[in-house]
Image 1 (spheres, rainbow, N blue to C red):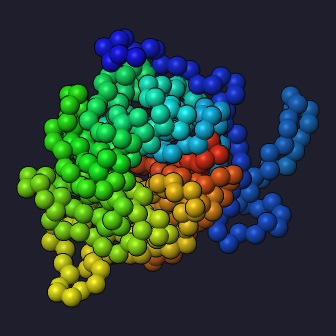
Image 2: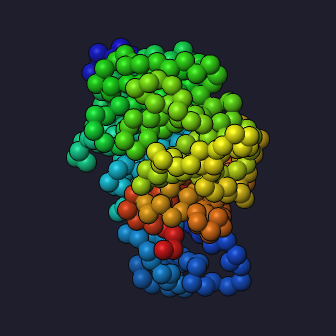
Length: 379
């Protein structure tokens, strides 16, 4: 469909087949003996005539239930998931070429499907400058393009062309002038003004790029790919100012902490690493192996053998990080202690992406099983 053609109205979700149901998850270390505080037994009710046992749990969020399964919107694996900046919406990207939009709170409805890509949707990023009344969403795709969406209407505002292959990652600045960065299999990193159809600038990296992110002030970009390192580029000088070395396999995702001081990286090497990216952090001296900027190395979650770019994220207070895994679990660590707080089961396939709510102790996970799991965690 030509870009100038009027966008179709926002499609409804998959009708009655798109639903949210209550499921059970456990904290790591819980056992299955009996129905306790961490479990919920739901009994059917026939107009109040039949009764069943319902145990309560300590609630920590405004979700309609402690754990919800959001399903029915996609016919193929989900590759990315993101909360909107105000936390009211969830966007999920799928290999079925579409993006689903969900209400985080209330009835958790699938409020729309965004269709416009011709191949798998690989990565999502919400605009940080658009008003909450008219949220904008950016998507990257295996079709080699990015699309700018009006998430309130479902309108496709703009298609961005410039890559020559699969686009693996898209990110945007946190403040000031809104700029996008994208990286792809063509070995290039492109910078975009989302109001223009052509890139502002191109960085030739020389190998497939799998993850990109902006620094807190937007003056630098973080680039990860097949060379196993994370390189930090200064956008004015257009050169690498330092590199973060330690991973032994391809970088699968990058995520900046809420404070902007630390960077989370995930990798096929089955480790999650957190780096100090503050401007005046110490640099390694001559002969130093690795990076003096390495803050924590987290283990306990395996990527698996599907070569999926598993994505991680931060809690709103910067104290926890989370990622998916080939073991079908969503793993959450307490950062400073480098200990696993939770390994949350429930998916029937690889957990491909996680996102943590910008204000509440809520997490959403995506999977190859075509579902999202939305739930609260203890504070």
